[in-house]
Image 1: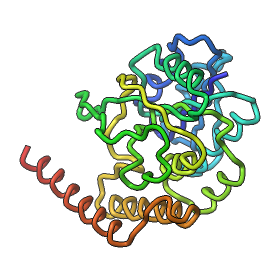
Image 2: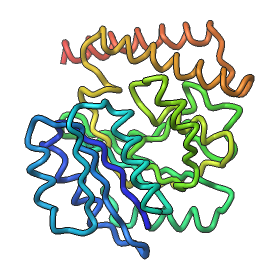
Image 3: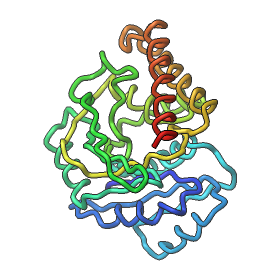
Image 4: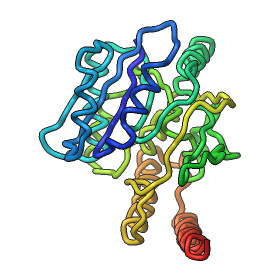
Length: 271
């Protein structure tokens, strides 16, 4: 069984496309969608209600907003309890464009038993246009010695991993830190005990708009970037000498992020 993890909050404008792109997959294993609705206040619940008679869709609605990390962890724990073999990531505002995406990735994992996680190339949808989002730095193979801020380059909506990589103690350790996102620290932990696979094929679209990881307000943007540093330091403390955290490297990275932010704002202003 392949579980598709869809964490969503107030994404009624995009959610139906995400769901349909997952349900349209042509794959030789059963697929089940787990939608974690983090107490949305828009029409998200109504969209999910459309699929109430589809046994492939499991709708999990929280009574109060938990945040992206806790919402996703709740979905993971339900997936684990249901005994699914694989987890595919698909945020509620992204979508898949290749109906063989899951089959390709499952085939890869079947033929590479030493690999626990696989990802693909993706497009970035900006202002209605699809832009190549395929970073030249792709995590592949044994990456535990180079997984730092530059190593987390996989686009989350392209990822499939084996459910048995999830360890209760690690999920609890991440949860205690209250990080704003889950993918960065989680994949860093995965890197300690499995290899990463990569398929050079465009299978998904990541929407670039204001979100937890792409805030438009500078203070929130700056807070998130500092949180990335905290995640990197946390991984390095947990596995000394494997993540190569250095204060000067962190400061250099923050400075480059600062410059990039204002260059983007200037380009929009003069566009």
